[in-house]
Image: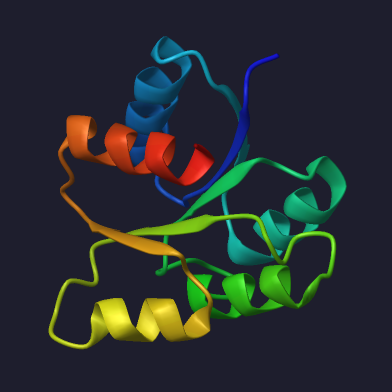
Length: 121
């Protein structure tokens, strides 16, 4: 059985890039276009890993991660922040919200895939 990844990303082009990369690597994907939908889908689908944009409509990625990590059934689910927020302190802010890893956009597909595999190992 392949591992399921939830992608929470509001930009369709970015979702398509992640969809192509991750499905080609053998992962099952589920997708949400805003933070609130991402939290609901995470609770419903119980993914093996979550890729979370930080700049999202409805609720931002930081709040979405806090809500996901507050759910006992999802607390151990790894979350990777995949974000264009790449200034000093942004990685620390993402980790403080509960993210297990941080990847700045634009990302290297090879590096992102390596990080996904590392957290699922």
